[in-house]
Image (tube, rainbow, N blue to C red; front, side):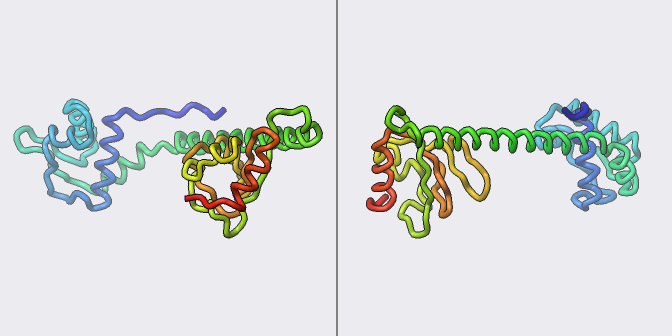
Length: 211
């Protein structure tokens, strides 16, 4: 797995956010920020957290905190230095690396499950007379009435006594799509049911109207 990344404290994240907003022009030089209570409410943190964020910005000479006078914005240049100082490239790379690793694991798992489904279909085709639960594959062809409707809306299970366990869509496999998955043209859905379900599904797709 990826190396450990450092989680920034909340007050530091707020200080970085305010510095970015000064650089982007949301706040101007000479402008006074709202009081700590207002900022605390905006960021949904305690006034103490805001105080620590302002102290950090004050130390970097970005703002000037004066008791009774509020928080005065002083410098854009120092904002850029501050942002650069706390830009954690290592953490960003760690996040990116971990996302890529998880994506690879997800793709590998989907390929494995897809392979098992194919084996199940092949095995079931050879032993249909003794298998009470047979998987079927059907393609959603252009013009079918169910396109754009959810599995629930078409009452798929009620009409076929079969359960959709996966949908092949544009090279990806969607597992256990659930009742709110929408049928799309080109989909190949994988359903499991008894032997009679095959004929029910054919009738469901090509003969019935789905309101």
